[in-house]
Amino acid sequence: MKLARAIHFDESDMNVYHSPARTGEWCITGGFEFSNWSEGDLAGKARQAFSNGWLGCETFGRVTFVAVTQIEPAELATLERMLAQHFVDMYGAPSVDAAMPVAVEELRQMVELCEDQDPNTVLTVARDLTVSGVNEAFRMIEPREAGLDQFAIHGSVD
Image (cartoon, rainbow, N blue to C red; front, side, top):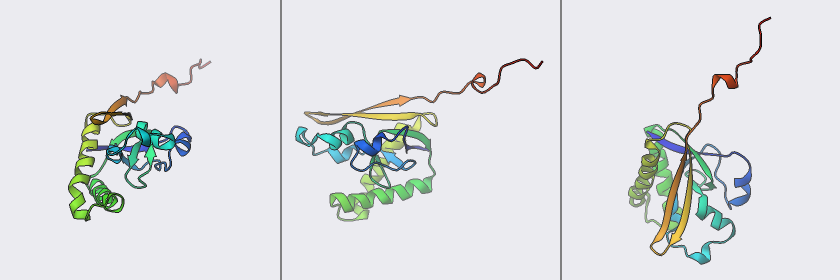
């Protein structure tokens, strides 16, 4: 089973998000956060989170890039509980038990997105606000294998 972890190529996420995700934490799309948003909500760092941010499942911060990797069933179960608790704490779900099916579904969708990707595939998300709600589009950037000639030292043995 595969999921995606937050990665940072530079420090830009520290400047563009109110709360940046931690490098290495498991992530989901997190588009549910924007379900009640309108154009008036799309300003500054909130716009960046809406437009391109994945949601970290530990800090609940945002990150621009995630990379696909293996996840163990026990890790996924822990994330389900953490996300269900987040729904209680932030969105007023009546209990963790009541929030669990939604948390499981959010993580299932991310597992499905990652399922057919090679390890280390980088994913990006782009969101638009439409009349019918939030539209999400995903881009997959495949990992490139390094050729031996990138590391071999060429020269003569003389």
